[in-house]
Length: 101
Image (cartoon, rainbow, N blue to C red):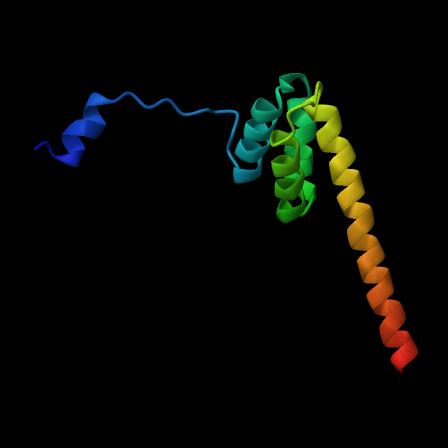
């Protein structure tokens, strides 16, 4: 049985110097999964500013889609749709609390 340190020394790990923050790595991974490396910076910006659960929900929806020709476009549409749904839920909850008072 080998020691872990021996195994680690045998492997050559390269660090991606473009990713100094977690959201950058997430944006890059998202661009690769969607096959849209051209718009990599857009996905990094979304990973930095948007709610991660919203992005994950859209990613899962798009990656499970079999008929999607352009997954990047479908992803952006799904993000917009999910944002609208969440805003409507917040608005309806605030309207209900106003009616109760």
